Image (cartoon, rainbow, N blue to C red; front, side, top):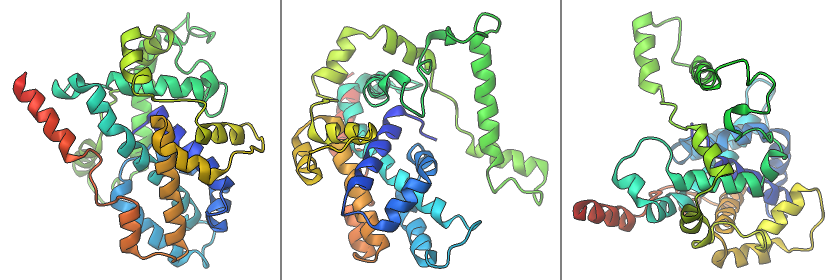
Length: 315
């Protein structure tokens, strides 16, 4: 999994833009509206680059004959979330390394500070400090202080317990856990697919309630991470509020090219949804779809990787 607030927000906003757009096919729009939560799950899940084409082929080849229980609609929604996840990755993974190189040079465990600060800003701006679904205002709260049970339990141990339960729930969904395998084989597969829980919510709470001025400068203000005055962001917020906005989508997309990083991520994600819609309708070939979706490109350009290696050698 890749459960970052920014990944989720990029999908939510790109999905809103897609529903608003005349360029996205009707099947995509109706399916997205029907299975929004499934698409959200896709937006925080890895593997989209490797599997999007296969899933899209399955969906479009079986669309007309789909029926309840074959999950064709859910797969299409999941792909929509995947594509927005990849857009966020391609926009921000280079930024993380350029703005917070010490984390990657030292191979630190856990989430980089810049990811945390991005997520905190998005939590404030896109989700109105947790007042907008799917969050709650207490989501980044220190030790869940507002919860009536917080005084009666050890919050940190409870968080660890629920983290383990969440991993167990995810493992139970895997198809490799089969009665045909003996226990030793199942355990080997389970541990091979187990991902450590390395996201510390207390770091998020610290950044949310007591942001460090230098980190705000380096990660948010200087690189212009988020600007609520950008037309594409204003359009997404107005759709979120259920309002009809006078902003023209195409003009907003064009302007986003030179605006905040978040605006550029929305432009990228919308493009991925648009070309996925075109491919689903067989308007473009698989080769063109791969090209327009950047499926054969690395998330972090070679130049940035080489720059980091140079820094590592100097240190």
